[in-house]
Length: 208
Image 1 (cartoon, rainbow, N blue to C red):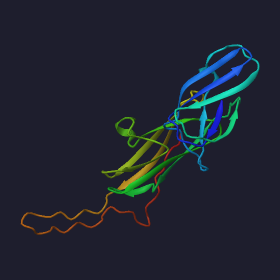
Image 2 (image 1 turned 45 degrees about the vertical axis):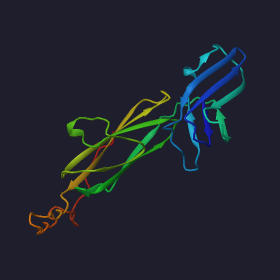
Image 3 (image 1 turned 60 degrees about the vertical axis):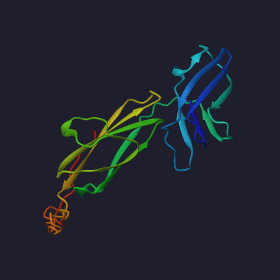
Image 4 (image 1 turned 135 degrees about the vertical axis):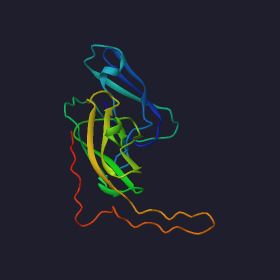
């Protein structure tokens, strides 16, 4: 079941009134649902997670309830059979950076319906673990090197299979920061001996 709504509820309650009785889905989460470019929140919820009546052949009415008392706008409700595989693309801006600089990572999702839960790991070498969450995140690398960044994408509705995507980032040594010495004098900062040059090549990376 797919719905589009235009408000910031924390959870929904969906009720399908059928020829065999009611099918109910309680506490459908909204807290981390991604808003699209038009400002709508799109929610996907599989029929297998509804409780109540079974063997229904006719849908007579739909009830939609929220934990907010304000008015909201319902854009669309659909019952769909979706076998489309979601495709994902990762971006790192910039893909070549320096220590101490902010790198912005993002995930783009196209294709089938998904309610994404996205977790990030910024260094595959020490094991993949959750270091940040969201479709857009920022990270600062402290040491030079070539890093493999991993995004683990799961579907909260349970329809789509989990995906794991990777992207490479090259981190070069940034300029040294001047540090005050004892006695009030200042040490001169070192030059940028490891910065990107015109000959620098973008790192190769694998998307799986």
